[in-house]
Length: 184
Image 1 (cartoon, rainbow, N blue to C red):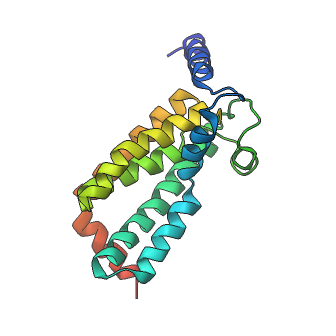
Image 2 (image 1 turned 90 degrees about the vertical axis):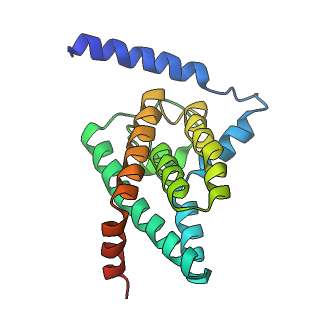
Image 3 (image 1 turned 120 degrees about the vertical axis):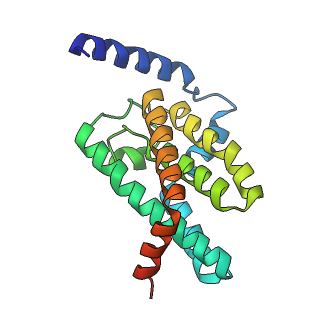
């Protein structure tokens, strides 16, 4: 793929992404902001740690698997972000993301949401898997709507997260044995 072709694709991506952005005055903006923040890693990590400490054996094992999966995915996504170094779209919303993580490709929120979607569908409980079937796309799309990601960032995050999730489910017996070795 030539440089001109890549530049044209990035321009189309930027225009498409801009068309999805919510206006300051839009009634949808608070809802989009809620979903955009609901994929923050510290929310997920705090909730999973709480489950790991307070849950029964099923929930502890479940939470530990998701915590380790989140950490492995985070390292991979951050590595890609610092390798690719695509700047986030211009905007005012999401200053904390812009300050702490100025790179947008791929979307860590989308990757995390789809990793959890796949893992929860595979590990259970079923009701939570169905919640994630709706929640994961809302998190991902809200990131574009709020102007902190391009559509291609989110698409790449979805693919990476789903791929990691499926891979971990396929390798679950080995993966679980590694995790259990790390936990006293």
